[in-house]
Length: 318
Image (cartoon, rainbow, N blue to C red; front, top):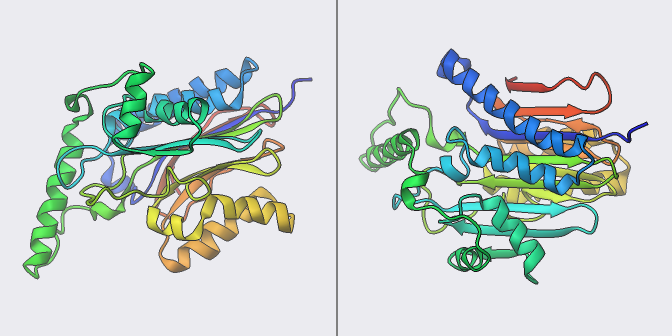
């Protein structure tokens, strides 16, 4: 009998309402999530490691312009892109991360490069781009990361900022740019019983001062330990940083003996929500159980396990 394996992924959380979504765009999101799920799950089904599975899933999402990571990364206040990513191996808690990357096509590959080819965990720009070029990872010009939708979001955010400075009301016809909390991530358990997590993001639209959120911070936005769980978070990063969300879930399981579902519920709903921490996460435990909790209006998410009905699950709204 094949040991249980599982994969779960997300494409961001926040204000995701059917009223703001066309049928065509909803279908495009679902197809992209399903494609990433299939890519990562195929690795696990063929006996591959969880680390490869989460990287493959995240790379597929980074390559898709719909998601705020890689090609679809949002614009900073200055009009460029600063991308963050992290990956963690549950076997030995090895980890790698990059912050503020500007040229690498797939930031999650850069994070794995840091983990496997340096003595460090987190490299900031411009050092991470230098490392990427030294090792020959694909890079892209700024034009590759340009999408009209993301550029329009920046213009909305800049306009809203000007109106607030004029003590006026924000534009009523657009959603709050702060509610666009796009991040992608994946967690997996492989047939050998090992866990892994990966997260990648373009950050927040109109961000300034080289702001870094929780995604590349091990223990906040990304964490994996074979003894407990693997976690990838998405949401308002400042709150996830303060709550050390990913590690807190692992601690509740390790020290209090809670189930994955209960630990996730406590952190996402009882600890984050009361302080304004909006968002969610995907998680898998040592037995291959999956949890996809969120306290926002929606979260792009998908999962599949080898046990149970083994049917792919893809969803957007509550």
